[in-house]
Image (cartoon, rainbow, N blue to C red):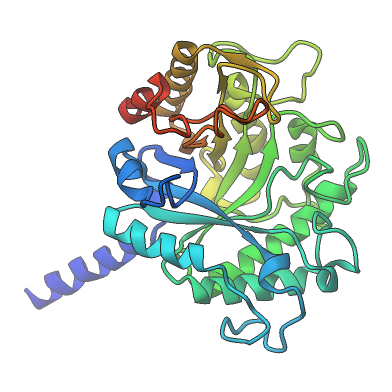
Length: 359
């Protein structure tokens, strides 16, 4: 009996160590505030919506504007950790919602005195991740940078060149090693590409994303933001005139790109390649705005949302699907963003109920 109990305990420990995203159904994620416009907590709203994960940014250049003396130690006085993340973790715990973090935007001391979109020194970034994962011990999902095939967000990124993806590959490897050494249960989400790109389309970024030894960089999931004006339909393949783009209709193509690249290189990807973490998808309603000039009616926004989540539900290669965001900007702002599930004034749009039903 003791041997049986010991075996069961060992099995339970092994299961607990496997990231939930590796076997669970698609995780329901969102980007949004931790407070509503009236100052109340947003977490009861997220709970009503059935949110599993709230995604948040961690701006390294604001956390460490000056180089910490003990960079791996989160208590070093050089760090200025944002209180809203700790608050989100506490409130999320009470409502059964996890937090995923995107550490990005490098300080000048870590990137050679350049703007924050420039890739930092790998060792500096790895040390910051070690400190962040010690500071936020319950956070398991880590998105490594964001929209890396857009020059406004990630540099260097020469047009049509492998330089940016190859440099990102080494940054991702450093991040992976740092986070896994801290806790093997950490889930490292790499890539984080955008559906299109003035400098480099995601299909090309993936093809170029190689380490100096020719292997693709290690990761657990591949992150992507498949924005589009097209209605979500996975029976459609390819975007006319842009064969290397990967929008909401092309997620199967994106997964095939990754499967070809990874399954011969990493044993745990031998069967199907990395699953996808869809970090951001959205459609504006009512009017064009400062973020998107394409928009649909409120009813059609709900239809687009439902169709997108149906793709996630019926595609085994999608580990998580995220919407951005919870609230529209105030109606008094003529260029205000209108991608929310709710108006700023608190009205629940049809998309709110479509998101709540989505699974």
